[in-house]
Length: 415
Image 1 (tube, rainbow, N blue to C red):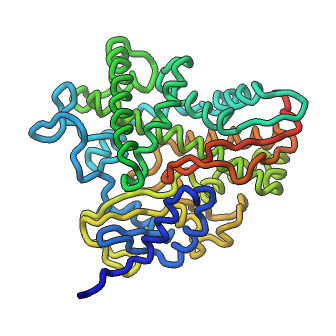
Image 2: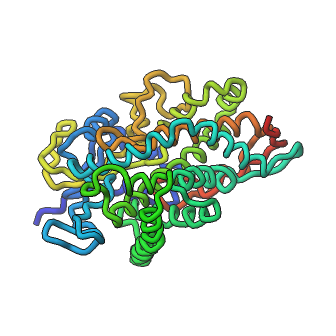
Image 3: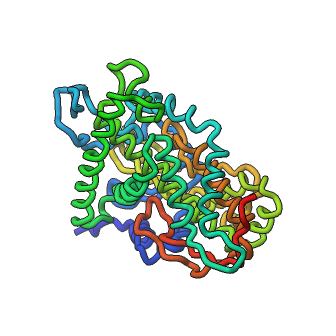
């Protein structure tokens, strides 16, 4: 009898998924970068090389679309929306051509609305820190007081959601995010809870959609409901799914960007001092945070044809996990990859993905990250961590701390 083929990456990947290692998965990512591709099991592969990930993100033979049918009532050509037209799913989880059509609609409404938002975002950041202002020493949880409320307020402003409903969106962001983790890491109870969450999300959004259809305003939802050809607009359930993904992608990732960036500054006081002295360094600091400790750590795809990756042939139909956080510290691409160094040149990080699925909200996330980290550096006097490492949330794909408590000697008033 022949013994089963060993897959060395399986144990390594298991340690990555272990919550006990969530505070610092980078030793395991470093092990993965020893080879650009690993076989996890008979039909699953891990790709950790920067060059290989970058190429695969742009390869049309890699599919983001789940092979399983989307939820919803079925019709002859697939699931149907409430108006009888086919429902293809949220565009983030689709391939061209359906992806391209839905993304184009969203970009057409999203991009103009974020132009000129920087002063508004900076004012939001200032207002949130002002709530904890004072000349004396104190303590602030950057996650609860800044990183969480800022992006949800921005998203609610884009969607036309009144401020009093922001806590509802905050709650849904946390509940929906768990759906992005590998299903094998979820318990049966968590899977059941996610089904309830999806149903609750639809129950919350569908009346809003009907209201905006009847009385359009100037928000993103109204724009998606009224612009363009009615025959090609998103069906209601498709719009609800797209808004759910925008909430997760626009909220949870920015929370992690600000929280991870705060930790990086506190752990590198020389960089903190340089940013305090020169706020113009903020764009470079944010780009280095995105490389050094990215909000999205990995990305799942499957092959639609045989693909050769670093000498290995990955058969059609196999799963590929793109290890973005490993690629961002690939020593073949980045000098001193474990050093937090904003002045590095050629910072071609993978934090926003690439190809047709390049992050829709990248520009907005950069605005929010730059505003928040600049304010932390310039307004908090002598900031230092209360607990390092802080506790981390369960999610591995969107990895970030539950809290980042910072002691300080005072918060400089606005102006």
